[in-house]
Structure formats: structure tokens, C-alpha cells
Image (cartoon, rainbow, N blue to C red; front, side):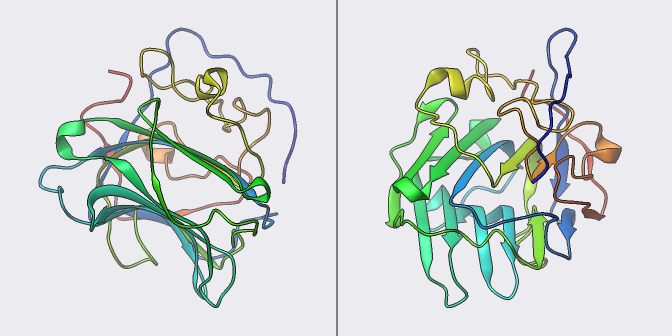
Length: 250
């Protein structure tokens, strides 16, 4: 894990650039993440907006696998339109945290902010949707086990490189596999979403929420959005991401 200070400032109100995944686009790394370790900690933050006609179907926000799944976040089809998070801790398929959100994300939701944090050593797992606590249902755990962050393939917007491609828009996808923040504390949520429900600048490399660069961070201009600004190494764009018609900052 790369840990170093980043003296970055942002001038003026932050405007998050969003990109469109049209069902034939995704970004992937066909190798393990650089310097990754299987800690019991993690934080995810991301903005999603579902595309027209997507209600009731299954779509992938992120997934890691190889030879079996590591961690995944989907917008599921059963139960419809709920988030499903899955963390496996061994290749026999054992799950240390699985959960369905209570809230749903649909086309009419517009931009939705997903914030999750887990400290599995203390069997703690939290989900906030649009800055509100989500009373999620745990299907597994949370257990005092380390998820399989170290996998041979990592994807944004597609499952195992082939299935359930995302259709819609994303902005500021942040995956920290080394640290935990108690997001029940409002000040910690404000590191990702402001009091008006808008994006917060996370730094050029995603360093600002914790002071450290996360393993994965996708943000910035459309032509370089797919370039991982985290320490985990480069990703490849499949298809062509285009600039979304709206931003969560609007």
C-alpha cells in the first residue's frame, strides 16, 4: 500500500465528471492489483445513475475474481433494484459479508450515492444510500475473516469480464481495501458527500478522505476516467466511455 501525503487543493465548487457505460463498455485489469493485501477493512464510495429501461435487471458496479469471486457490488434483479454486496474469504466460496440493501436504486432515483464501510475484525459493516443509513439485511456475516481482495482479475461495470454489464452513468468510484471509517459519524460521510447531497472532491488520487491513496479510484476527465488513480495499477477500457449527460454535481 502506498502511503504518502498529497498537498492537493481544489479551487471553486467541485464538479464531478460522470461517464456513461452503454452495456458494451467496461474497465478491467487482467492481473492482480499492485501491493494488495487481504485486510479486514474497506471503504467504498461511488455515484451511479441507472440508464433508461434498466429497472428490474441485474447490473455490475464492481467485481473481482479469479479463480473465484473476491468482492462484488451489484444492482440486483431479485430482489429487484436492491444493492447486493458480496465478500468471499476463501476459494471454497465461503462468504464473510453478504447483504441486500433495504433501499432501491431505479431509473427514477436519478443520481444515487453509495457509501459502504466495513471492519470485519469487529464484525462491523455499514451501508449508507444518499447520506441516509440503509437498514440492510445481512445474508452472511459479517464475520471476522479477511475478504479475498487479491484476485487475478478486477472489473468496473461488468461481472467476470462477460456478464451483467452496467448500463447507466458512474462518477468518482473509490475502493479502499486498507482502511475503515465509521460512516455513522457525519463528519466521515462529509469526506465523500456534502450536506446538500453533492459530491466532494476526493483528491487527484483519492487521497483526501483518509490521507492515503486507495487501491482503486476512477475519476476525472472522460478520456482518462478509466485510468486507475489508485495505487493498484492500470486498467484497460473495453468499448468507449462517453461523457454522461448529467453529473451528480448538477
